[in-house]
Image (cartoon, rainbow, N blue to C red; front, side, top):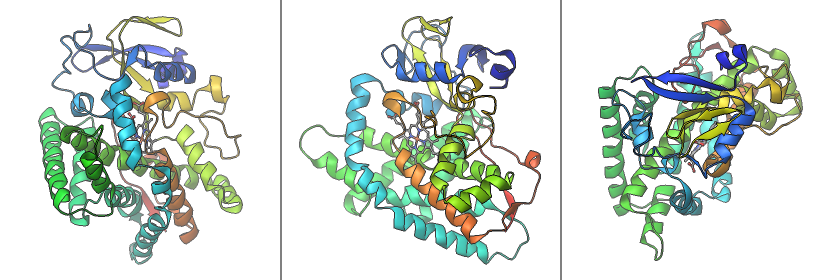
Length: 386
Ligand code: HEM
């Protein structure tokens, strides 16, 4: 993104580990173009294309589980539509909306615990922005409380770029092993949760999910359903604490929905989405990207593109006229969990700042350490004084 700003190009050649040539598209226009064009820009890693040699992902890529997994993000066309419509049957807007009181309750419980903290400085990632989304997505899918740590721990390992291939393989294996056993257990012990709904859908006549599809749906949704929201909440807390005027305005106007939209644009947790691969040479903003070359789609670049959002594009500003952002992607892979993420973030942020009106960062902004991953970004720790 920095190179895009400094050098002005919106399609940049880069080299990935394993000497794999790739491209970054990072302006609003090019991100929009690439995500919308699923006719020739595939999400599935195509076999036998140039840059990826024989089509296998280099063994030293930590995120290869995500790239090679058999889930929504690696499917295209009719394959993708079929799976997505089966999931949409369980994951309805009404179901998400009905969660609001329970999310509020979970939020309040965490805030009660925080209020009891005796320490002068507490880590809001540990105490708040991490446990809430983990609890919400796990409760929605019926993962018992004592088993949730495993979902978080495996996600951390799978997404971090400092993970070794061995660690990634081990974490991936642990997660799929756990989920296979969990689904089997749920078959015998149904509950009021989405895993049970998906199992029932498997038993219905007509088009149904295979066992493998079930496994990968849970795999993806449990990861994507918390990692993104953990970081969005924390990024937004930083943005508000470092700009008290914005925080005061959000409080005064109760404009938390706009706070969340502005964060999705300018402080998004998802900085890039998984690769797209052209199945034929494609022209993007005057540059020809050869068939098969992986394209990194920079959501962070699109959200802060000056050509689209003006000179102050990088500034978090809730007074900005609401404008379409690409924070949840675009086209057929548009985020399945967008309504849940919006609801959860709004409740979390409004409740946090209502409960602790004096909340402030206990470190300078430039001292905050950010997690490093190709896909998501957010503080590892967030020391605050309540
Ligand atoms: C897809 C962002 C929360 C589940 C996506 C995509 C983006 C995104 C940019 C498009 C990926 C692509 O085109 O390759 C975010 C952000 C979130 C968030 C910024 C929170 C702040 C959630 C939640 C869930 C979820 C809470 C849980 C249900 C998914 C799934 C997909 C997806 C399953 C794949 C959809 C498909 O391929 O059809 N998300 N997401 N996300 N998201 Fe989210």
